[in-house]
Length: 233
Image (cartoon, rainbow, N blue to C red; front, side, top):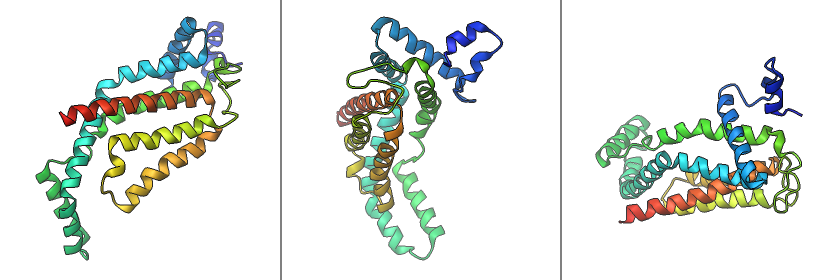
């Protein structure tokens, strides 16, 4: 078994056979150490994953909070300028370059920066990838039971977690207000397609990974509620 701690104690760099990835591997090592530390307190790997999800969410709370707030504000402004954008599409239907220029001018006048909320998300991406890698490759989860799950390293036998993950992704978009925006057909299609597609793909994912994903989605909805109240005030 590729037990990272055991292989490292043996020396010779044998711990490198545990493939956490080239770019986020060093983060995964710390994530695994945290997971093991939580296990010493809970004596259950499922609870350890939930605590790890909570800790990561708290660490990334402020950048995520700012990103959610920016996206919510941009969504409100997009609703306001939607009639102007539709008018530009009709006026310059045969001139795509002019259409783009006028659209960017309206964005500038309305104070809209489509990429403004993306930087915090980019900063979070390595952490999320490292978590996925940790939960997918941790031998500690093999044979570990949690609730109805008999092995957190295997897929959910009754497929409850994949359905929960897809459902919570859709609910998260609803809470954020993305479902109610006057988005273009292709954009609306992606809002529905991505949760359904990932939910379908997750039928083969390790159930430990899905426990993390579902808990993170639920925490994200709570955070979005907090953002919505701040904006309403």
